[in-house]
Image (cartoon, rainbow, N blue to C red; front, side, top):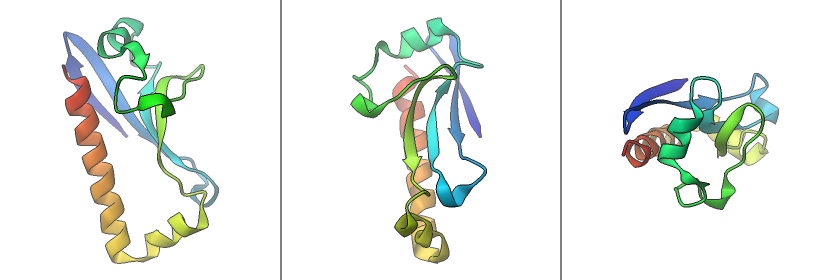
Length: 108
């Protein structure tokens, strides 16, 4: 899923991406290189992402400017929450609040 927004005249795409094998993987959120120009990333994170809510936990690779783990479905106790309606709602609220918070932070 991608969220598109503008920041300082730059168009940005914030992606939430899961893996096809949910029972042994995790979900990440971040800015992929595809769809996000280097200048836009430098605008929202001139000192990389260390001084943002991504903190020092951010990672990058050939496909991503920066990403962090959002949900860890590779952990049995986290997957178990999918079967509890209250925990599912808590996870949904967490995802929505995280996405909204990141868009607000990076939409300078």
